Amino acid sequence: MKDVKPGVKASVQKQVEFEDSAAALGNEGIKVLSSPAMILLMELASAKVLTPYLEEDERTVGIAFDIRHMAPTPVGMNVVASSELVETSGIKFKFHVEVLDDMEKIGEGTISMAVIKMERFLEGAISKKL
Image (tube, rainbow, N blue to C red; front, side):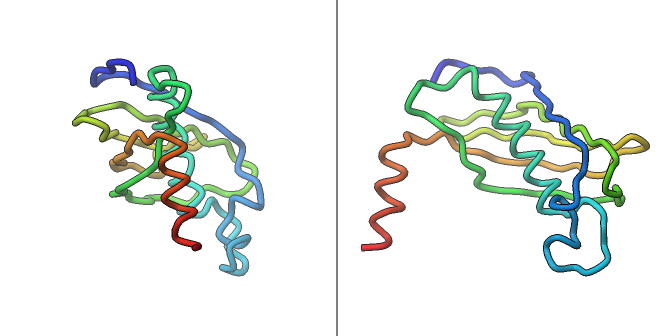
């Protein structure tokens, strides 16, 4: 991995679709952005921060989440998840994340990620099935 310093930022945006909703996950009638979908956007934004610094055989994985989901966002509204690298420690990275919809901040918190070597990581996962 190439050297990366705190302060690097990235964001991802999308329009909330039914498959992103709590209703799609089984919470009948709750057609708003689900917490898992919001956290996924936060993780994607954090991964995007590190992507330019990764070697070809490296990827990121989430390892810790401290997130608050503060307001509902209905299907059809846009959201933007932003992430800023705030701490590095070897292969571990901590990010401050937040998500805004068209009206307000709907979520915030921290995500920690690790950089993994793909082949070794997948070998470890596959060995669990043997």
